[in-house]
Image (cartoon, rainbow, N blue to C red; front, top):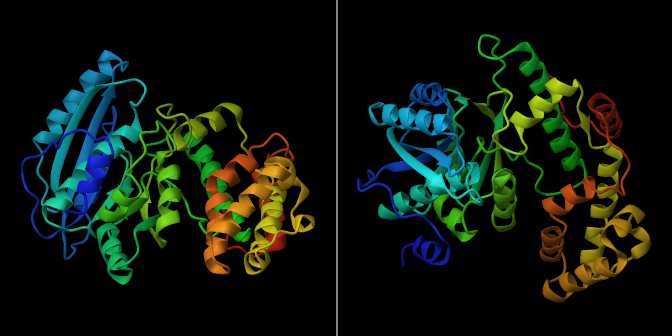
Length: 392
């Protein structure tokens, strides 16, 4: 059975878009959602300037709109799509898709990303390449010259790894973006690095950035976790942490992607709306570092609990008990003890229950201490450990 057959028989997906068969040496397919974004041509030009690799590349651009999209944006999307159909590149084969009138309930970046990634799976299935790389990018990004070369090198070095996340730095080009946008995005980017570093200090095993333009997944791994979510925002977060439960996710430390720092309200959260809020409010409140210290004390218990297959409530922080509920906490641990062996397997199961979604819910709980300014929280973090956090 082809590696994709079970996926497409089990999960809903739109029909294939392309009749042309991929070349047998295609090793990476880039998927780019595009909604009313003329910057896509700069993104593609950036990909065209990348260094050569041993594999061939395809780029799928999913120009998309929903049933409630304004007519002027629908028209602009068609103009972009028509232009994409007329362009040829030497470094990759460009495959544009136009989807319109998507139901309001699912219209958005998640559905567009899923549409393109599903199509990438079909194309890898045609050439029987389950280890093919599907890279996720956005239409407002630039990439480094080594983008494909570094992905290729890392994939070869980690043949059994199912996913990869890339280092990034926002494109602080004053010729394109306003000073207000750039300064606001500097705050947000520093927050992202603070969050990742603080989460890493807790001992949480999956402390990596989850940015839609900065990750890649092998085709077979994509199918095994049920594909991309159709969420209208945060689809990258949900996808990557679901992936991390199944396979190793390798971090590529080299900066490969330069996302836009612009104001946007196209998604409910993320860079665009956060930059907009900072520009309007002039400040950005972040999670109190003391919350991460509480999580650390909780996660530090997992080794002893896993070894002895017993829980000592006195060692669990009161804040965790109050948030989860003592009875519910006991049930979760009992289920893990009953269904996993001692040691690392049990510890892994515990982290599958107390996962990234648990962390976010805990951090946002009204039971917890108030948020604070970024500078203040970073200083708290630095007192505990030299985490390598750097402010730009």
